[in-house]
Length: 279
Image (cartoon, rainbow, N blue to C red; front, side, top):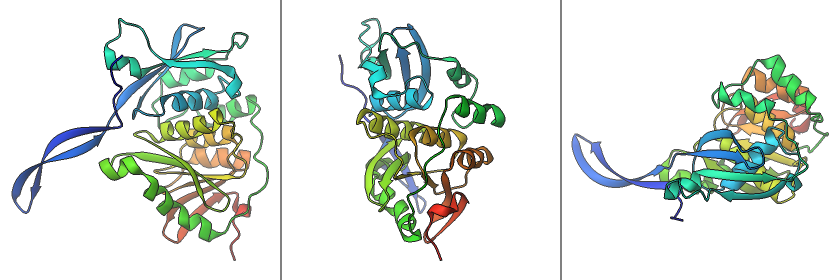
């Protein structure tokens, strides 16, 4: 098989500055489709535009977040496509997932991915009911953290974004412990994919649920960000921008502390203020 595409793509650009044009090289964030296939069902269950890298983690996190699997043990094997009829590097855009034989997954919840984009969900009431039907528990109380710990997160996330530094075009999702120490970070052109990679990595490392951790995402908090965080047991979710109304509803329903507009020494708490130890 040929070499897979990297997370960065080199490009020749022309820069116009002070009325003069010059040529230089630049790096772009690679964007390629990832097709997730279930081997036993012989069907494609999702296609997402992503930045290549941590593809197995992305697939595992997606399947876990959507309720197709409930644990690492549900996955027997993951591999890239070996179909010789598929062109070389494109085989790295297809992940085959083999589930344990006795598992019969419920694929109905995945139907919404075929008629909504990554920023949308189905209607609010149906979305909340779907999480209850999956028996997602309310997040346990704690941990309690200080504002100073929350203030420190954006800079730590930004400093760890290696691909963003090179390209300027990536979202990130990071997990911290209750003391604000960065434990893991993943980047992707889609913020939902970055979170899937993060949760998938925790799943494959037997680190779920993340009941004593903080997750921070770049961009805004949407329904899907809170859905994935709820399933992973995350008690505190932070973002640099605003949450959506449905994200706030999910956070309130499942006991998540939802923080938005985290910039400098200021942030808004939309739900779960009890976990923030402020004067």
